[in-house]
Structures are given as C-alpha cells and as structure tokens.
Length: 292
Image (tube, rainbow, N blue to C red):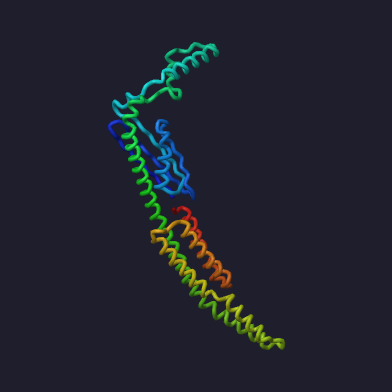
C-alpha cells in the first residue's frame, strides 16, 4: 500500500530527519539512503522497516546534521586533500593553463572523503546519537502506517460499494430468473411432446435428457453460493486476519459463480446483468493487490 511518513528529532548534538515513501508492491523492496558514517547500521534500519511495513516498494532517506559545538568533531583529512590538490595542480599544468591555488584547494575540499569525524568524539556520542536516530525512524514509520490506514479505510469503502452493487445485481438476476423459468418450462414441454410422439421414443433416454436439461439451465445453486461469497467477503474484510490474498481468493470464487450464471442462464437480460457484475468484480480484484 502507498504511504508516506516524515519525522524530525533533535538532541543536544544532532538533528535527525527520517523520510519514508511506500508504493504498492507484492513484495518488500527497500532502498536506503543514509549517511556514510552510519552505513554499518543499515541492516538494523532495514529490519526495523521490514517489521513495520511488511510489503511495498520502500524508499528511505536519513539526514543527520550536527548541532552547535558537536560539529567541531569534524576535521579535514589533510593527506587526502593534499593528494587531490597535487593531482589537480598537475592536471592544470598538463593542460597548459594557470590555476589559482585557492580555487584548486576549494575543488580539493569538495572531493570525496575529505572530512573525518573525530574518533574520540564519535565514541562518546555514538550510543546517544543512535537512540535519537531510532526514535526518528520509528516516528516516520508510525506516520507512514497511519497514512496506510487512512488509505485502507478508503479501500474498504470501495469494496463495500462494489459488494453492495453486486448484491443488488444478483437480486436483479433473481427477478429475471422468475420470468425465464416459464419460458424454459414451455420450451421443455414442447420438446417433451415432440419426443413422446416420436415412434423411437426411449423412456430411459428421455429421463436422462430431462435431468441434464434441468441441471443445465438451473442457476439456483450458483445464486446461493454467490450470495454466500459476498457475505463471506464482507466478514473477512472486518476480521483481524484479513489480507489481500484471502480477499482475492474469495473474489475468484465469486467470479466462478458469476461466469456460471452467465453461461447457464441462456437469457439476454441476465447476461447483461452478469456483465455489470463482472465489471464490479474487476474493481475489487484490482484493489486487493494493494492490501497487505
């Protein structure tokens, strides 16, 4: 399910901003963007996201900014900066143009790994800073799940509307079936008369054909099963163990009954109603893929 959550938590030393975006997906796919300083914590963050979200294409962004005197723990990696500077200076000479030392230094300081965190300061703050980071991640996950719950309520309303619509259409089928039965009965009587008048009339064969004919056109069981599936879908929607797969399985069973009604009815009016029922069922199937 789609979701979004963002949280900012500050301590005396750092300001942490955690942002989570979740898109619909059958599986859990997590993309993390975190500061290099905390790369060893990525597995822990992934586990935290997995437990909270379970499924979806998730994008996680973590930004950490030092506050006040804590930023003094960052120092220049002079050896790396000097190497960058010399390489840039040599490149400028090879290209035969004069480069300002100030400009070369500015470029060198912008290269990767030119800053280090003071080890002693980092050791003192690691536990406290990590607790702040976890707090921000938890808060972002909670907001993301709140977003998901709101979307879930919208989906529930869509499901209920579609189920109610199919139930209403099923009632129409029952009414149309009342008019269909006399037509089927008359057709059956005519066929019986033709068979009885035939000199090759076989009573046993007639009984078999009659049973087959009745079973072929009777949709009573299909109507009852479809209504049961509609009721079960709503009950499952309200239960705690409700999930997208289970709702989809019930929707498939509903589809089988609707298809059978359409094929057995042999009635233009009922078949038009069946088409509308299929349209509503497709709406349900599309949305079950968005439920965890």
